Length: 381
Image (cartoon, rainbow, N blue to C red; front, side):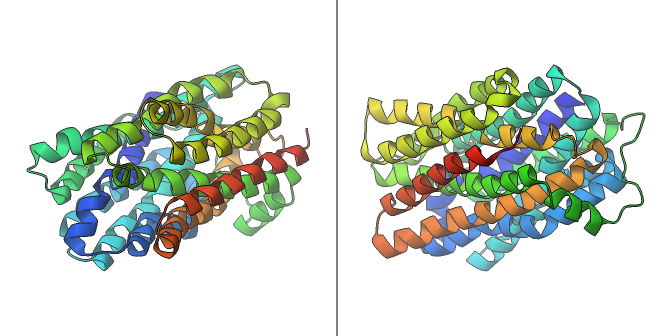
């Protein structure tokens, strides 16, 4: 189950990030400005927000096998339909479709782990599961311009079709081999509104929601534009893709290590330290070049990647958040977090159009890191 879940999240990472290294040819072919591209980059987060709460309820009622299969099919369609995008509106619709299927995967993952794993093994499981998203992103950034595009005569539309077919294949593996737990963690007669009200009344849950919003704004805002930032600083498309992938490659061991070794009592303090270091490093990356840039990107990936895993741990380990309601809790988390996931890329694009530089956006995201560090002091044990 964990391997299948990991493969699904790899596909999630590939399709969600494949557009990043293709920003330049898409801008040129579809005659778009930066704020339009920022809206496209954040469009799936916008639909994700609307679907997340519904997806959490569906997961709690249907179970993970059927729900995650439906999510994989929709994600594959989102990628494949970009082949037919001949203007910014058509591209926006195809990208936004990802937000309909994406919640099934990202919310279904914590619910699956909560059902199948207990105790210390839960930390290793969530670390491996979370790494799938980063590995998928690494593959998309490193291989799209250097391997996939040359094989397809530099046709970005066909590249999206390839990624869609891969997702369909993994979805088929999931539906053939995945299964539910014997106990079947479905919700009782409590209504969806009552579940959300009870969860929302928990102080730690409210803090996790607020921090998730900020963390996703930082992650999506910076990573969405990073290849373009590097291209503006003189790198070619393939070089920018490889350089941007350094952050993901460095983040994978961090995701696997930190959630499993940090004791519960130190998670808040760990997040605060990582958030402050991320703020400093993000601004530094905008100012350096050469070897210092590559080192900075690696450090940035290592210190920022565990945010989501640590936040999900706060949810899972809260005694009031029972396993049968983990789908709803995950839905609440991703619904709020993806508001930041939409706002981050969009505001970065707007700030570029206003100032002519990405530095203003980087400073804004750095300030959000400081806000996360501040909020960690209010967690209750």
